[in-house]
Length: 104
Image 1 (tube, rainbow, N blue to C red):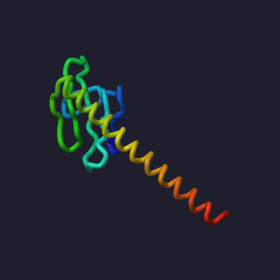
Image 2 (image 1 turned 60 degrees about the horizontal axis):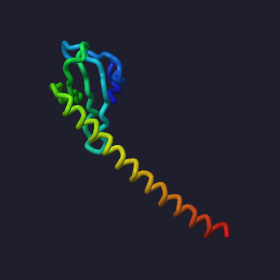
Image 3 (image 1 turned 60 degrees about the vertical axis):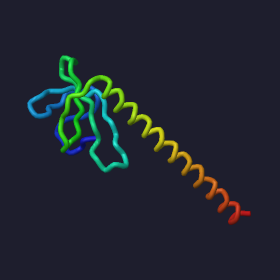
Image 4 (image 1 turned 180 degrees about the vertical axis):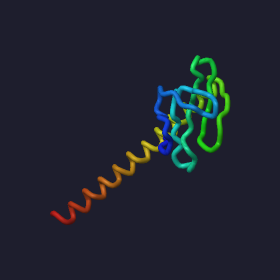
């Protein structure tokens, strides 16, 4: 999420990119690739979609590309969440084993 900007980049807000005023439709997190998050933006009339990555630029996309970006983001988020859950379960089992050794 853009945090060093005077503009509010949350979904539903209007932002200015260059000379265009665009509405934020989706924020696409990009964890692990060390790139800034991507944003799906639309013109104020809602007739054109754009993909914006800070420091990389703005590009026109169609609805299919936007759908693919969002689906990929959700898949990646699910994968990261699954890994975090598995790690938490392993940690809980290790803690339980240590507590059993110490307190029994």
